[in-house]
Image (cartoon, rainbow, N blue to C red; front, side, top):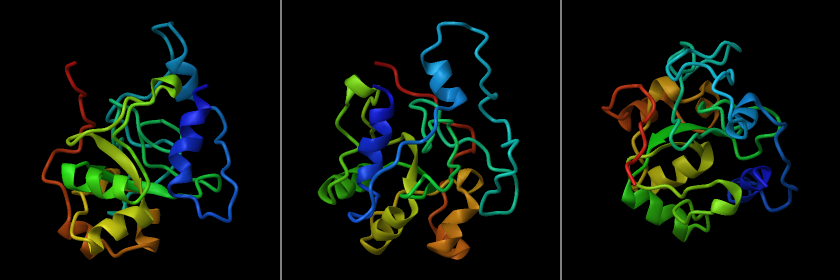
Length: 180
């Protein structure tokens, strides 16, 4: 059932004429379903070993691990040809942005436990569709961006100056989620 979360989240960013695609299973998927403590996930602050770069030209660092974000749920805002929504902007979510995106038809707040999606809340760090972040910026509700965790592909949608103007003041370490 886990792949369904990819489809649900992709629908809000996928052009209506394109059929959503499902990403290939990743190490993160295997780890999420494995009780073994030896599951090989990269350390939370490790740079991306695949060569992905952030908007500053350095190695891409993780965005969020609790909940685990990214198109492939690796914790990073990496992308590929199957990511039609281009989930590359790492943002520290705000209540204003969450209300905005729900109003746009992308409900990131409501939990969907049947697919392992806990629902998001202000303070969570999440890889947003670049086009949604630009829409939110134009509406005056863009959440702060974490530059070192935002993939360089975001620069196809907006300028580095605009991203810097919205940069989060928080450290680059992924979020430590929530006490119940």
